Image 1 (cartoon, rainbow, N blue to C red):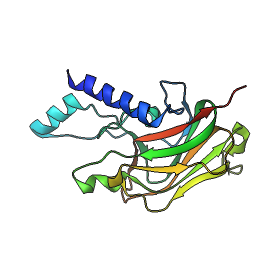
Image 2: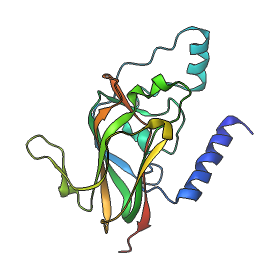
Image 3: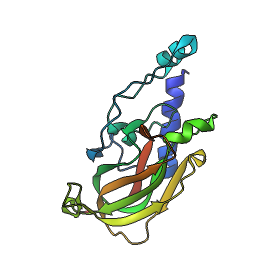
Image 4: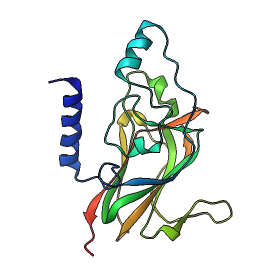
Length: 198
């Protein structure tokens, strides 16, 4: 088996263990609004950089949809411009949420964690009007979870549902990353639960 087949098997196994991810862009989840994407490509020099560019293409100019894919491999993330911002997601269907997870790839080099989210909040709503991001009319919906010191070496931070009966929209609001002023790496936002029957 080749490396891509192993990665796909790993992603499928993760879905079987955790349940269906209703934010997954391959399942119908979509980005409705997001902070700008970092435009400057990563410069990987030398022979090692050439090999890395061949194996792991830069995702620098790709959009926030990467945060909704099932990939969790170093370098395969949405590079949100700056150290504060947001990602508004419409789930594939209205669900009774079980948990929402924010993920980050584990690295052997701790210096690579500078772009990881540190302080963030997750909001959830059943109707789009509850979440407004325009200046002068900002509404976030109801708080689902809050983290003030995320440790990316742990790989993920999950928030269990305690109050929400139904959710269709999820907002990830990044208040601060771990020190990189140029960009914040968002590897994954996963939303698990059960569909609400019409």
